[in-house]
Length: 302
Image (cartoon, rainbow, N blue to C red):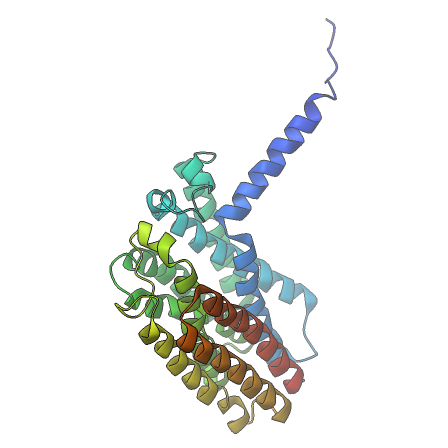
C-alpha cells in the first residue's frame, strides 16, 4: 500500500481555519474588554500583596478571571444574538453570522465559567469564587435581559463591573474589608459616566435593538449630561476616602483628584455642547482615569 504524503498546501488553509476559530473565540469572550476586567483584578491582588507577590499566583488569578469574565460575555452574546444582528457594531459577531453555533458557544461558556470559578475556589478561597459567580450570573442573567426594559440596567450592570478588583483583594486576604468596599465603590461610580458616554455615542445603534442605556427620557440631552456630572462628583468625593482611611498616600490622592477633575471638565463640556464628539471625550477620559488611579494606588501602597 502506498501511503500518500500529506500535502503542505493544506497546512496554510488549516492554520488559517484555526486562526479564524481562535479569533471567533476572542470575539465571543470579548478579549479586549476582558483584559481590562482582568487588569482590575490584578490591581486588587497587587494592592493586597505589595512587592512580595507570587508571579504564579498572579498569573493564575489572571487566567481564572479571564475565564469567568469570558463566560459571562459569551452568555451575553448567546442571549442577545438576535439583537446583535440589528446593530452595526455587533452584526459581524460569530453567532450572528453563524460562523459558530449556539451549542458550541454554550460549551465554551460553560467550561470556561466552571474552570475559572473552580480555580478561584481551590487555589485562592471560596469567597473569591462566590464573588466571581455573583459577577458572572448578575451580568449574564440580570443585566443582559434588563437593558431592553429599563435604564436601571446600567445600575445593575455596574455591580458585576465593580467586583473584579475586589476579587483580586479577596483572593489574597480572604475578606472584603474596608479596602474591598472602597475598591468596589470607586469602580461602581466610575461606570456611570463611562457607560452613559458609550450609550450616548452608540445611541442610534442601541435603539435598533431596543436597549435603554441612557438614564433619562431626554436621551442625548442635557439631563443625561447632568447625570454624568452628578456621578462624577460622587466619584470625586468617594475617591478621597482611600487617603482618609490611610489606605493610600498623598500622591494617589492627587492623582484621584486630578483624574476626577478631568472627567468633570469633559462632563461639563458635554452638558454645554451635547454632541457625540463631547461624549467621546468623556468616554476617553474615563478610560484613562481608571487604570491610572489603580496603578497609583498600588504604587502608593508599596
